[in-house]
Length: 283
Image 1 (cartoon, helix red, strand yellow):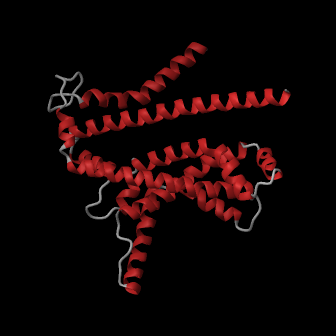
Image 2: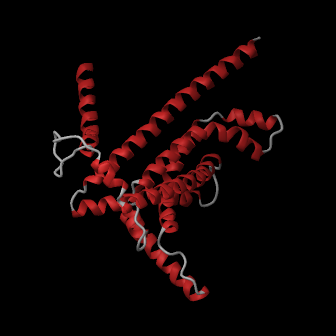
Image 3: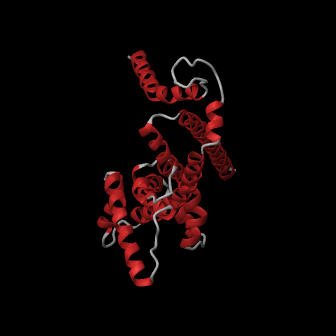
């Protein structure tokens, strides 16, 4: 039974990872028609990628949007999680919780269309009242839509950490004279920091590879990297897309491995500090 479970796990992992790994050798192919095995090895598609202004501009736009979205989502998600966990009874709690969790179950097409209609209405209102049509569809509107979606995911991750957190630490800090704001920044925030980092990475990834909401909220001349890749895919796969995908895979792998190493070291350091505190208390 154990052998069967391990074999099944290996097959599932191969099924999930093999399509991604196939992209890597194809990006180094020297042929015009990309097939496996490759006819030869070359960096021609990476050179073509460096000269593809649309993909490069889309990458930088996606990077800026994802960084901004991840930061805003973590900030708003932390506040929402703190309210839902620490204030269990207040008027409108069910409505607040439902609105926060709605993007988790709502189709992205509905979210994008609703935001588009709202942005058009706001733009017409500001233009008629103040003479300026704000906001123009572009960076700001994309960040707004991605933050709406990412905040819900960040809240779920941070909320689980807050529920598992030992409240006695905060109570001890308040007994020692800390004010609520000091307790939050000196005790609560450091304890939920790993969850905040995880939430930031999750929302960053969701924002970076989003296509549907970006299609609705991007204006003329504003194209994210997933939009550019999707456009190339509809007209026939451009081999430079494989080179871009390989670079993204390498970047994501480095970030995940670095974060995992940091988490392991942080847990070991925390365990050593707790053991040292216990030994000191016994002495």
